[in-house]
Image 1 (tube, rainbow, N blue to C red):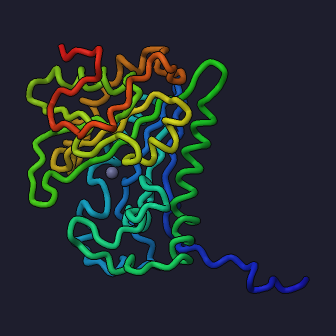
Image 2 (cartoon, protein in one colour; image 1 turned 30 degrees about the horizontal axis):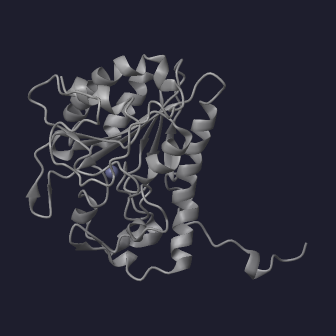
Amino acid sequence: MQPEPASSRRSASILADDEPPAHELIEGSGRRPIIFVCDHASNRVPRSLDGLGLADHHLADHIAWDIGAAGVARRLARWFDADAVLAGYSRLVVDLNRSLHDAGAFAEISDGVLVPGNIGLGMEARGARARDVYHPYHRTIRQRIDAGTNAEQTPVFIAIHSFTPRANGVERPCHVGVLWDRDPRLPLPLMRALREDPDIVVADNEPYSGRHPADFTIDHHAEPLGLAHAGIEIRQDLVRDDVGQEQWAARLADALRPVLEQEAVYTRLTAAARVPSDRQRPIEYSRARWPAGETDE
Ligand SMILES: [Zn+2]
């Protein structure tokens, strides 16, 4: 056998054989296809990247992952007998909720913390992280969408995130935010149901916008296919431990259940159901922003 020329040899994976895979897949067997995704489920860094040069307390903090989000997503997947795709590695390795062309995909600084392992990162290092972590995650999501799609139905797509209660010195008073853009089928009933509890502050496209291009995973997978979808952001101090994760998963499950029982959400968005894009307008920081024609009852 001829030796393989060095130029065609693939460089070694950044993940060692004994490390977890790029992502975790939970396969549902429910009657209806529902896919939960958790882009920032993990704060793990492959050993080969040596903690990205960060102190352990930074890797434990919100810059590395969405604290509590994985526990909520796993519970929701279990209760709805749905799929869940959860990131196996930190957003600081590569941010799965960004285009690879976005500077934020390999953040050099996050909430004021320099990430030494990402400074001046070369194309080869970026390519290796994309190959071993980023692409496998997005490929699996696409496969689960394909598996849940047939002539009669399309999957519902729900992204679970969590946000830090304080960013850049500013307190964030909302408990939960629903991110969306032009497909109102999931977000509006979800926000309405959550707002039935007067003690919960429910934000509309806060603390981040669901409007293009801010929410890559949804923009990339759900919107082009017309899948009913929502991004859900929960404040991290509410889901730090198992008790909080259980409570919030239950709260979200109660709010989601009625809408997930409707046939209409398992179809592609039609032009008639699409609401006008409001991306030309500034984001309004209010508790109740509804598109034209909707009322906040
Ligand atoms: Zn997130």
